[in-house]
Amino acid sequence: MKKIQMVDLQSQYAKIKETVNTSIQEVLNTSAYINGPLVKEFQSDLEKYLDVKHVIPCANGTDALQIAMMGLGLEQGDEVITADFTFAATVEVIALLKLTPVLVDVEPDTFNIDINALKKAITPKTKAIVPVHLFGQVANMEAVLEIAEEHNLFVIEDNAQAIGADYTFKNGTKQKAGTIGNVGTTSFFPSKNLGCYGDGGAIFTNDDELAHTLRGIVNHGMYTRYYHDVVGVNSRLDSIQAGVLKAKLPLLDSYCEARRNAARFYNNAFANNPNIITPTTSSCNGICETCNCHVFHQYTLQITNGKRDELHKHLLENDIPNAIYYPIALHSQKAYKDSRYNEDDFPVTNKLIKTVISLPMHTELDNEQLSFITNIINNFL
Image (cartoon, rainbow, N blue to C red; front, side, top):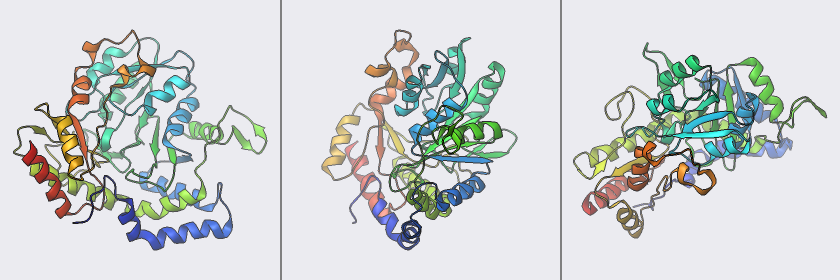
């Protein structure tokens, strides 16, 4: 059996080596390393794929969130509501901009922002909501949009883990994750479903005026060289990374489907294990064949018999990589503790940090590896 990896980028690269190498060589031949032709070509390709008017490439996903908030003109002290159970980058940029982070609990099945908790958290100082499409599943955007409209709030989608996913509205229309709110952001970190070979990110919007502002912010606030119209940062996607992403973008849907197939295998194998809660999708029971609401950036179980940590060690002893995303709630992190938070307001998050474990999930998993992983887990539990 081939060695099991948490993410097998080497095997993925081997299948697309010629295309990727050609793109990289093109950059080397032209020496157009910053804002070269491949950046503009990838930007255009991604706009078509997402069916969004504007894609603004940038240096990484964290920058994308920060720049999105800067572009919306949020001011010091404005409250921004987001999920407690997510990676710190989401709340980090809120704090960096001297905005006020407001953390709320998540749903027990999707791990995405809890709509009732979101409603309760709104105050006169609330100016924006940041739904996180965690682990590859789109949050309840229809409800988020209704709340935002009622209270005149911005919606900033953190789509770092769900690029390629679809959201289906009640009327049957579909829209790509990251293109639904006022602005969306993503990361092209190498392990993402659409990952480059370094750092990279992008911002999406259908708002022409906002897009213009964002394009200035990512480039030192310049629209004309050496003329600084807005306060900006230095955050650009370099041409080599754009070349890698341009080569991989046509394969994104197949990558997501491969991940869903692996998730189906896992779910079927664990179906009769009473100590495991498997991932489910928000729009159907299990993982159906007809929708794309979850693209499984991570495959995350809940272990219900108190043996999560023991399982984590047991898997490592059997050369099965795994991870705990996330071991500490954001509201408990030293950097983000706040007297406003009451532990009783986070029952789901406080449970998840003790029960979740993420298994290997990538495009190159084969049935032999999946059988080995699931047998080890079922036998242990």
